[in-house]
Length: 346
View 1 (cartoon, one colour):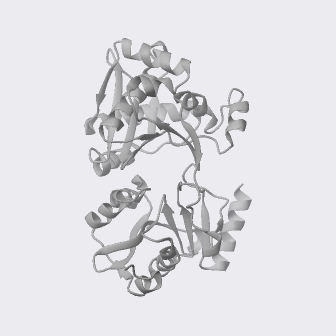
View 2 (spheres, helix red, strand yellow):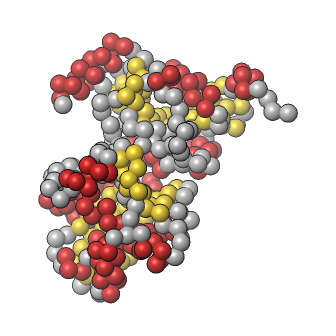
């Protein structure tokens, strides 16, 4: 006989799982995400954030939890508790308890939650839990996700003709695509910097990418490099957890564009993801507009994420939007100051 949920909740309290135990819990979730792993928290802790796992359960069994990143607010206003692509609960009834625990254990002025994607009809009722939509997102709320199940020709058949043609041309060229080593981070970072300058977006430092490699590769990801006669034409970092892979970082050279290295290296990443048992490949980030608007405007715009939409749309994926960003004010005065600052900066 099943135990009523109110009796289960009465037995649940705050627990302190090990990093290994937490990661095991995350991997078991249908919505398992790289940004909820303990290694992601350890990485961000070296670059201006704090990190804390808040978990509820009985004994050593986790029933609900979240990796929380902590950021100091200006003017000594306290800190923000940020939950990227989480948290998780064995039963939705546990979510209110989880957010209460996050607030209590972190002492934050407010919680910023980016819960990611949920199957239709299963999203939690965030307003009922005291959350309101936030004007500030940290992760891109909209992406293109490719179905990479099936044979190569099946996957290629979902793409548009131009993308298929460029992949095949790249595969017939003399480009060498290999998995990188720590010594390759310097070249990767230089290429990232040149790409960022060319396309007007900020990039992380070489030290950051060194730590990404150290923290997450090869257990959760790979660095792929595409070279031709000694020239580095493209490089990407791709990560996988559960049934999904994510393309988070990528750079390319303008040289030898006729070899279509950016297409060949993405195809290699898809093959890597399939070997890891993934069914989905997330291209991670397009402008936050509905598909009709994206299709109507992408040829005329190159600002922000518009510059990459033209490339990503050809891979035959589905445009998906997460739940976006939500805030839960724990200190109303501090949160009001934060909202006012965001409004002024916008």
